[in-house]
Structure formats: structure tokens, C-alpha cells
Image 1 (tube, rainbow, N blue to C red):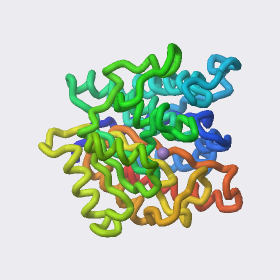
Image 2: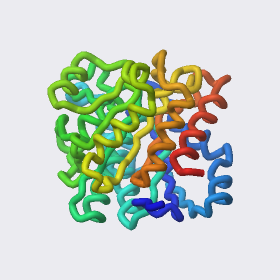
Image 3: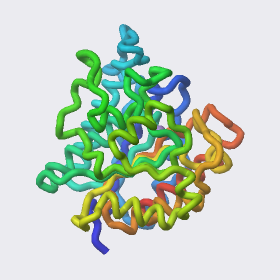
Image 4: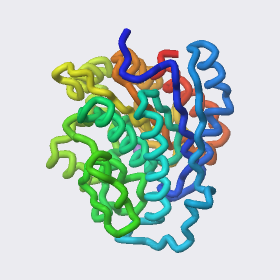
Length: 317
Ligand SMILES: [Mn+2]
């Protein structure tokens, strides 16, 4: 089987960061996953080399006490600086062809992870655009203008696509054209809680989206056929970055997350998505975000177990 990323070297980025969300807790997500021993297990079975990298909000360089709201955005400079930091870490690892797994963290870190692989893939494959699968209950495509909360974990797709622009110096002005993604190669799966303005953006720009209604109507197998076909419709081996929000899963399997929404993917459906990504050979990076150990703490093990299953399935381990 052919793979577009080097599977003998798995780079892990622990993005311990939750300033993009209204409540803290998801910065403890990476440790909750790592503590299970999943990577020892994967390394022993698949002979992977692991390199840990921690991007923590406790880092002195990310301490920005004068981070005032800007254009309605909450903690914009902290989130921007963390995303820039993560973008560079992911880029450094993806550029030589390593598979990069990033553990979140709230989903604002997606601006960092996806921009990092997007740039790396353009350089590795002489200008080729990255494909992105965004598996989420939410569309995360609000802009500073449309967001009701001002929280940046609801906006990563808007910044990655260029739909949202830097509102001020120091806030996402590090994003270059090479970081941005081609939305013709972007697909959503699992949507079921999308704001009105986001719905309008998706309709206006023609972004491919498979809602939970679509999953129920067509079945997850057919949805994955269509999603992968959309990303790689001419079979030119489009490298894929999957950004997996644990809240795409039904609360039965992922109760420990900040904004769970009923009627989500079953664990079997979620695992199927991950397996198909592995089998495509085109998956070059995976994010797993929004596990919050401070929510539904008594059932954290259920959520962590589900997260581990998604990771293992996407890695073919
Ligand atoms: Mn999300």
C-alpha cells in the first residue's frame, strides 16, 4: 500500500491550549490521551518513532497580559500567537514527510495545524493543494463580524479559507497565502449545529458539507465515498489533513466536550471515517480536538477511549 506520509515516523504535537474557547479544560486533553499509554502501544506494534512537542499556554512567550478584545474577538492575540507557534511546529514536521498528529486543545488550534500542513504540502508536492476533512458538529466558519460569542474556536475555517481577514496587526497577520486552503478540496462531515450566518457562507461559497441528516439518509459508507471523491476527484493523490472535533461524535460516546450536540456520529461511524482515511493512503495529518476533562468528568474515560479509537483507526494501528 502506498502512503503520502512517512508512517515510520509519527510526529505528535500536544497543543495544550484552550484560550479560543469560553471555558478552560481542553488544554488537559492531550495528557488525558497520552496517559492511556496509547502511543507506547502504537510504537510497539507499528514501529513508529514519536516526537513530542508541547505548545502550552503557560509558555512565557505566549503570555500576553494586554490582550484586549478586538473587533469582538476574545483573547485574539493569545490565540493568534499560539496558532502561529503550532503552525510552525506542524510545518517543520510535515515538510520532510512525517505524519503529524496534533492533540488539542480547543479547535482554534486548527488555524495552526492546517496552515502548517498546507504550506508543507505545497512545498513537498510542487504547489499541490491540501485536501481537508473537517469532522465536527459545528462549522467553525464564523468571522469576527458574524460570530455571536467572539470565541475563536468557532472561526478557524474562516481564517484558513481567507474568508476572515486579520482585523488588526498581531492578530492572524502571520497567515500567508501559502498557509491558506483551497475550499474546493474541503469537506465537512457531521454538521448539526450551524449558525445562520455560517449556513449562508457555506451556501454562498459552495463548500461541500455532509450533515448528520446526510449521514442518516445515505449512510456513512456512501458519505465517505462522496467526500473522498470530492477531495480527490481526478485521482491525483491529494494529501488529506483530517481535523477531528470529538464533538462530531454523539454525546453518548463523547460526553466530555464543551459543546456537545445530540444526534451525532456513533462511535462505529466515527471509526469508519478514520479507517477510510487510513485506507486512502492520502492522510498526512490528523487533529483530535475539544476533549475537555473538566466536563462530565465521571465519564471522561468514555470520551478518551473513543478518542483513542479514532486515532488508532486513522493510523491503521
Ligand atoms: Mn470544531
